[in-house]
Length: 163
Image 1 (cartoon, rainbow, N blue to C red):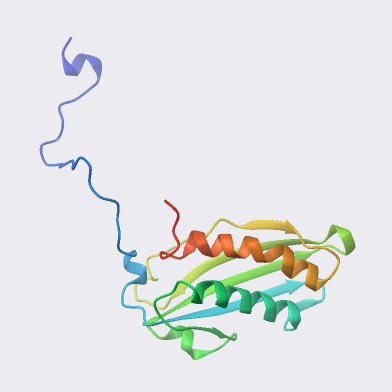
Image 2: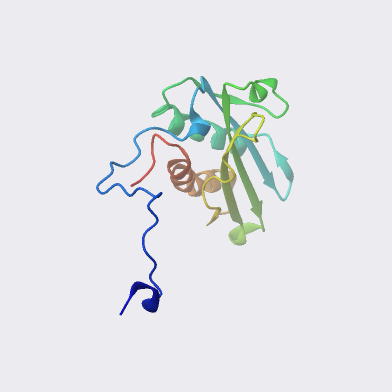
């Protein structure tokens, strides 16, 4: 039986296959030439936008996790800070939305990198969204969010990528 009869065509001579090619060891182009990394957090609760203990705790936790592995300075910025628009800056957008009341509170978490670049930065998605039971207080919510935040950052940062 010929290749055409089985539906298999002859391999394209213009495509090269490299057997045993090593895994990529460099960070994606999105991260190249970055000189600073900023953390920008937005925490929404049934009370509105949180600017207190929960917001500060989420931002500081994200900063600490990223700073342990990032080969550049890491700092927290606020909404409207012009630092995020610098072309050598990557900003990790951390968004937490808490819904419900009492024992039914739920926290949804997303993490996505942003870079001001002519082509949109070249990275469309970050880590998959996560949801956790948030407990009855902001302190309980922060404790519940912390491990999921670290996992989301692990999934997003090239220096912590899992293989």
